[in-house]
Amino acid sequence: MTDSVEEKTPKRPSVPTEAGLTPKVRRRRRRFLAEYVIVVAGVLTALAAEQAAQWLHWQWRARGAERDIRRDLHLTADLASERVAIGRCLDGRLTLLQRRIEALPATSTPLPGDADGFPMPFAYRAPSRAWNAEVWDGAMADGAWLHLKRERARALSLLYLTVRSSRQANIDEKHESSDL
Image 1 (spheres, rainbow, N blue to C red):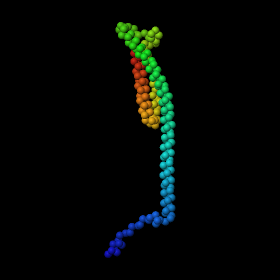
Image 2: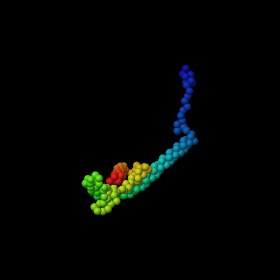
Image 3: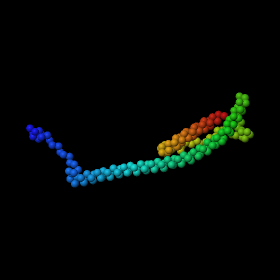
Image 4: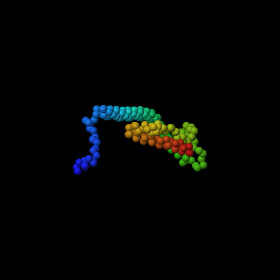
């Protein structure tokens, strides 16, 4: 009875071990593994080289953006210094015009365009300057700002927000000064 049970169950083929393989099969496996390692190493090397090239490219772009921003901020600093320097003069002129308006009767003529005896074409003229944020906008558009140091990018963002505010204040002041 035991003989008939053994005969009915099929025998599983045995999995050959490394020792049981023929030399030809072993060589094929080694060659395959060697080629596989070479391909994987080549792909990893290519990916690493591409990453290095990308890093160098973005460092170059970030340095260029920094250079352009620095030049732009020098001009912006000149504009801001000029605005601070003439601020008291402009405030004084507005105060003078306010006193004259308050002292004049309602049916008077337009205000004279003079400043302490010096003829002026207008009673008041707000200075108009080009507050420029296009360099920062360019750095934002091409992604160079992402490769600046985080604190530097934050500081520049806030600084250019101030530049935009100054530009808008300049435009508003120009429109309002035409009403005088």
